[in-house]
Image (cartoon, rainbow, N blue to C red):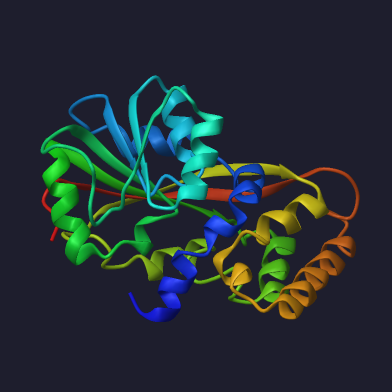
Length: 251
């Protein structure tokens, strides 16, 4: 990971409370598909953030452990899900014993891992037959206003993994051998202000200088105010939860 990527990867703690409030959960159908090859119910949510994916796993009745490197993000997770085992740690140094989980899931996090180091660590903690899956929530730019929002926002806000085609291109080669892929409809109820607040938790926005950030968010508010779908009241932001799934045995 280069210095720019490192800056992006470590930007979320400063906005942990906003992340917890505004980021979406994950489509339950996507999580079920990610896990339907797992040999048992023990799941590690790796790079768990504030617990968005963790909460979905808990709701499905799984035996969940969450691991997150950022103290502020981990604090939000523990406040939201006090009964979940939540530990500090990273993908490159997982604080769990060998063969202790049946699946490792990562929600909007797998692209931040150094897989040369994390791959063997993930393989170490997985039981025989265990599954690794990465899940990403992407905006569905087949909707015209969403495509327009992406154009206005720019790649710093709605970036290379944030639309279906971009996600497919940017995640090529992230797991070897070639993983299975699937995408599941999802959505998030938002107002224009709430959607801007959600986009403000993106890494590309968090690392902007204050004036650039303010100008960017103002531009997004103006766009949403001009669209009939988003100008007044609540609407559903159309999304997909996209999944990569592979078996134990990573580089």
